[in-house]
Every structure is written in structure tokens, then in C-alpha cells.
Image (tube, rainbow over the protein chains, first blue to last red):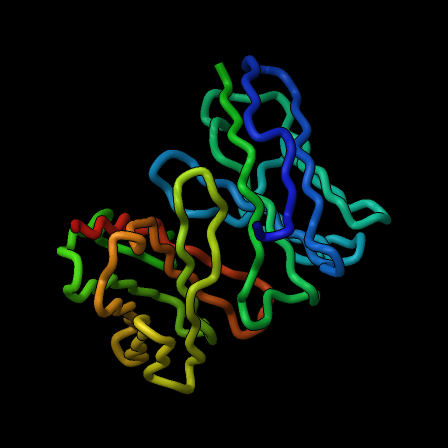
Length: 115
Length: 112
């Protein structure tokens, strides 16, 4: 158990819809990262928040947005969903503002299926 | 543009033998390299790392080798065990320390 909690574990929705994925980082971790893993693909970095502020941005679509709340949990909002958005979405956390040594603690992921 | 590549999607090895997983990168600004292991229905977990100032780092049965001139790193597992069967991701950290880039992963199967 990494200590990172993601909900929901599975989500099935239709094209055009909007969903919200939630992540609670490990106790004491200030940074939250979101990654997308499509079928047979590597982990694509989407966005990072540190103590409530956006810290780094990767290949995140404009239809996607995220935020980190004062209690440090984070939400990833995916809107106008397309079939290609079907993927496993991972949240990870770290203590500091940078991956620094690169050791991130990952949740179990939220599997999104868009029909 | 894939900056971190794992060209072998899968690898099968007999228990007790050596497993060698390879990773290539293109960005010379990467400063730190890591391997993560992922079991089904779980998130990736950190396995071992190496700084760009080193060429080898060892932790028990796991050794990571870095060849900076070739922009290549490899993970050696000796001896391989069935419990090592998982997907292994290579990852690279930029020198600003704020972006971790993952490869596509290699599925390792260790046969008893």
C-alpha cells in the first residue's frame, strides 16, 4: 500500500460527458502528479501540483483540468470525453516540490472507459 | 517524440537466470534515471535509481547500469524469480528536477 488513494477505481461513461477523478496523497506529501496510461503505452505526464499551486505541466489536453485543494487532495477533471480518453489515470505524490530523486508514490489508478 | 524508449515490449526468462531490461533515451539533459515495477491492478513502485554521475548502482538482486555516451541504461536482475514477473518502466528526470519521463514499459515473465 503506497498510501496514495484514488477514487473511483473504475468508471464507465459516454462520449461528450464529464468526469472527475480524485486523489488523496500520502500523509505529509505536498506534491501531486497526474499520469495517463493508454493501452500498451507508457505513463504520460499530465500535470503536477505542489501545495495548491500548479508546478509543472505536461501533455495535458485543454479539455482536462486539475486542482489541488487546501487539504492537499487533488481532482482531475476530464470533459467532452472522447473514445481516445479511455485509459488508466494514475495519481502519484512526493514530499517535495520536485520529483527530485524521482521517487514517486503511485496510487492504484482509476480506469476510465469511454463508450 | 519519445524521449525514453524501451524497445522490447516483453521478455521471458527462466527462473534463476539473468533478466536484462534495456532503455534508451535521447535527451542529454536527463540527470537521474529510475526503474519502476508494476504488478497488475497496482500502481508502479520505485525499484532502483542511478545518478548521471555514476555508471552502476546495485541493490540486492537488482543492478542498474548507465552508459551516458550511448544514452542507454539497463536493469539486471540476478537471479530472476517468478515474483519478478511484472511490467518494468524506465524513467528519466530532467536536470531541473521537475519532470519525470517514462518509457513504454517491458513486460517481464519469469518462468518457474
